[in-house]
Image 1 (cartoon, one colour):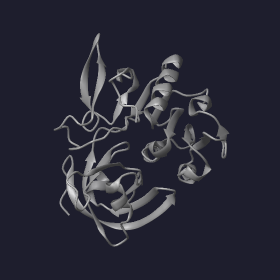
Image 2 (cartoon, helix red, strand yellow):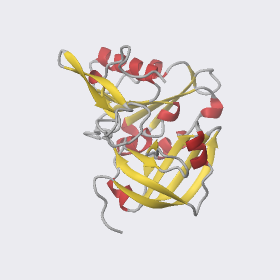
Image 3 (tube, one colour):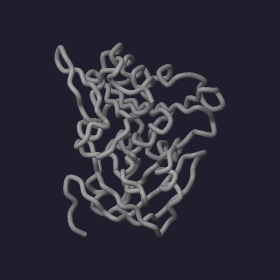
Image 4 (tube, one colour):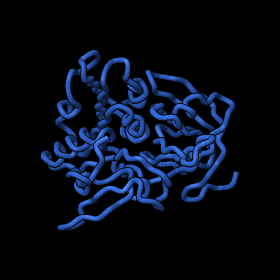
Length: 261
């Protein structure tokens, strides 16, 4: 297999596929050089048969020549992908976007994920081992995913649910550890806004992975434009090309800045 460019298109055979929670699917594909090139926080654009636009799905984990995707079957396109079976193949454009800048993995850090924003954090938290506290929030017990996966990497986990059916009954921002030198977060916009505020109050850096609808995946269209603070003003950036990970201090959460999906 030829070396991958910055990003490339490959036909990847599905090695494993299963449902792990209501509406949540876990698929691992044989990706060769794409897997070697992928970095924590990046994503892939996956072709859906019969559809014009590819679907963006965050890379959950990389293995020895494999890519793992954990995603929600929310629309028609992702429902088609969720029906895929081992032995079939996905047409994948990857790796795309700018992922997390992990820096010194000897620091005490915190990863904060909400719902389907949890999967992109798994690979990023691995190298920190027990120095990473992973705080995850879900609607209820039946929506909880990937807790054992984080623990296998030695990460310390804190589970929160909206209804109190598992773990702490409350918000992820109520469970941030006292000893924390940087926060990495992915999830719904209201959660990211709250996490960014918490990081600012503590005076520590924070990286946010934004969830936006994407069409082209490489910055050619304006489908995933977000407003970023730039000096005393602002500018438009693309989640697919400039992100999906941004310094929290640059993200404009005011009206029209980031969609509240």
